[in-house]
Image (cartoon, rainbow, N blue to C red):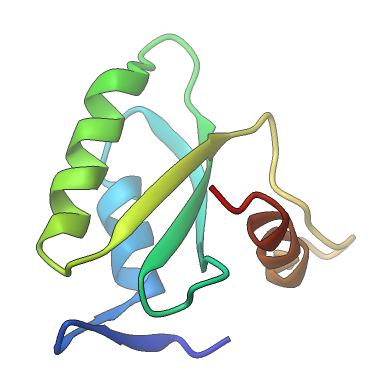
Length: 103
């Protein structure tokens, strides 16, 4: 996975999108991966923080951020993200999931 991508001539990184989402008090963990159409879609896999979670507000904020980059984005909420025994995130598993969920 290329950590730097370009949409409509605007550079962004998946980490930048993850940091944006992590700045929300509603998000405990997040991973952003490219969709099947790498240059136009991103998928955010989010573990929400209990008690303060508002999916509508979070979705609107994420879509507004993506609009700046000319991207489409989708959010999937999960109880946990796939990780190895040492805590390393299995991004490939999430990328496979995104590829299966073509919308």
